[in-house]
Amino acid sequence: MATQEDQSQQRVFVDGSFAELAKEMADYLHIGEEVKPLLEKDQKDEALKKIVIASPILNSVPEKEFQSSYNLLIYLVLQSDNAGMFLPRVCENLMKPITTSPVHGPGLALNALTTIFNLLKPDSERDNELRFNVFMAILRFVKLNGFYETLKRCLPEIKGWLKQWETDEEDQRKLYLEVAEVAHDAGDEETSYQHVLSALRTFDEDEVKSEEAQQLALRALKSSILSPTHYDFQDLLAVPAIQALSESHPLYHELLVIFAEKDLEDYSDFLEEHEGFVEKEHLDGEKLQRKIRLLTFASLAASTPNREIPYASIAKALQIPDEEVEMWTIDVIRAGLVEGKLSQLNKLFLVHRTVYRVFSEKQWRELNDRLSGWTGILKNVITNLRREQANAEAHKRREAEDLERRLANAGISGGDRGDRGERGERNERAPRRERTDDDD
Image 1: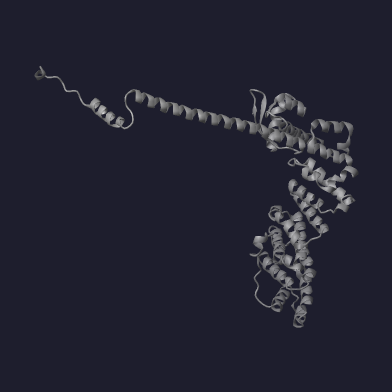
Image 2 (image 1 turned 120 degrees about the horizontal axis):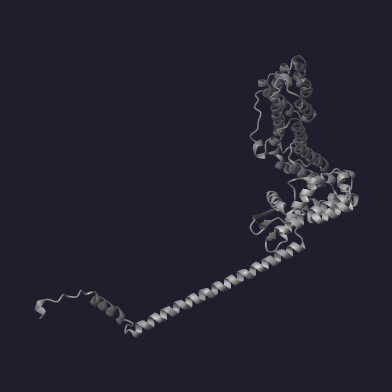
């Protein structure tokens, strides 16, 4: 698929009138005699109907003729005011195997689907609805045949397209969920999660407690807490459908709050209080245990004022043996939750930067205290610099006054000083004449 910048460059070049091109296509499909009288009566849609019904044969034409023949078919269909009546059949054909090209066939079919999408005019009310349907067909094709990386390049455009197409919430939800499925099948869990979240946001306030919304909210919640790369849950907690889980599925909501704001001790208490919940819900206990430990480490780093964490404190917070501290420290750094370095000699982890899991009133107070501390330090630095500057200037003045006083005591002052100094220097520099016998 082309992005909006590329679409203006995608064109199908054909030469001839509709009747001439339709006749050419019909002859290629071996139905020329059936279509000819319809074209003579200017019954374009009837002619197109016969052509489209016969078009599955294009999936078995020689590979080198596939693109040009489909381009011609697509061009003819888009000339009709009722293109929406024919495009679903064309897209359906392209979902089927290209028998003459088992290796390149899927790529050729995707190119044809992309051509349809890009030739539909983005500023046309009719074409906007068609573009949505074609894009959904492309998603289904990618899900069946791969090519996820090709699709992924255009995913940032989706929200803009949906707004441009004036797509209603239900269809938006369908599209987001289809993208989520495709990304999940391709192993891109973060993109899948983000599109499930986008689908959740399409529910109106009076729909968030519906069965559909709640099931989708559970899906997003499970995906977020089990994901090995997702550690920020504040966006999820802000979604109304997720908030509604506190009533319909309170244990899941409590579990989410633990992963969003609390630590390993709270998680252990949850497991003890609701024994068997994780196993009953078929959640991966090992993944959850590992993740809450990493999050606990991040909270410990954020709450340590002097930025130095003893190994013993880490071992206690994560409930691990001392010998595993360095391994978990490396893991939390790799997860991007903390930056710092290990001091093996002093058994300390020196924190350079940490991610705040939640930024509430407590964190604002901590930030205010740190800013106040930095302000005090800077004020002291400025005061010391000004004092040293004043001392340096005073010392310079004293040296100048002392020099002036010594010169005055030596009888050198004002305007005479220069001339006398020069004569004195000349006298001092004059070489002494050696004594001879004539001097006696």
